[in-house]
Image (cartoon, rainbow, N blue to C red; front, side, top):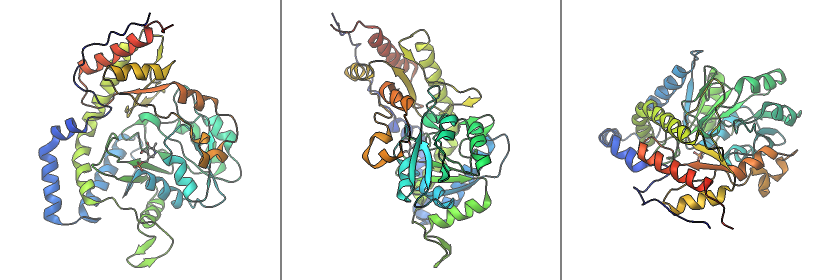
Length: 387
Ligand SMILES: Cc1ncc(COP(=O)(O)O)c(C=O)c1O
């Protein structure tokens, strides 16, 4: 018989805890916002430029090659992808190889430009694009490859470059979930031709509204991306190409500048929380812990298990007051606008969609919170299945 013995509910848990975050830095936020009102510089201007420079320095510092990084703030992470692809000249008739196991924006940015997002399967060991699958998906129409550093761990950029470079195909890293991640001494966003970030509030570095950024180590690509994000204007009222209007506003930049100072500590807290979950699940063969690629520094945007009977486990956790999310339940190639991008079977993508379950992960989880979640998972996966 299936006996439910939920623990007495503890404090309400959430996937992210922005209330705790705001409370922990409130005086700094208040001062930053007051500074914006005093300066009345709401769009572009020195506050946005100051944040772009601070972010460029932060990312370049993580990279052992000490590259010069350029950062262009924009309105959101989806625009960042579109701007990066536009800077590479992607347009109608082109193909862009990307994963199907990702948030829709990765493929949408290519589709908005009239290109076809072509899907390559993932490496089951990391959830990220499998380089050999990318190689198989490349045709003479391939204009770019867009790996996603999913859940906070970088794709195998060295292997992807060795597929793309000989063919002259540029790489745009979708680093929306991976600010601060590194692999083999390279920082997420700086290991390809361009990288993109999202500052959606739930991201590791989230604004309190929308925001995004394009990164690159190439001065010409940076200049072009900046122009494209500003209506294709080389200078005011002089437009050299068709661009878009995509701005990071100064209030978001001021908030992000405050939060960037705390990002290293918050990233450490995420990594420690992941290590605690890992310990709890170490001897539980019913769950597969988040994979770690060798030489990679995972920043745990998500802590994502694989588990059989995933939906039953999610239901059981919800009954115990523990939220979970499924990133992502349906692969992009199974959705009508993107079906044409499946050029071959994507079995690992489909299996991941059936098995993944993301647990609460943010820097403000206590040891008790983590233990409570882990105990509940263990109880559910080891309980006999009801007859
Ligand atoms: C992998 C990935 N790419 C792109 C985006 C798009 O970012 P935004 O929501 O800021 O447009 C997101 C997040 O939302 C994402 O997770």
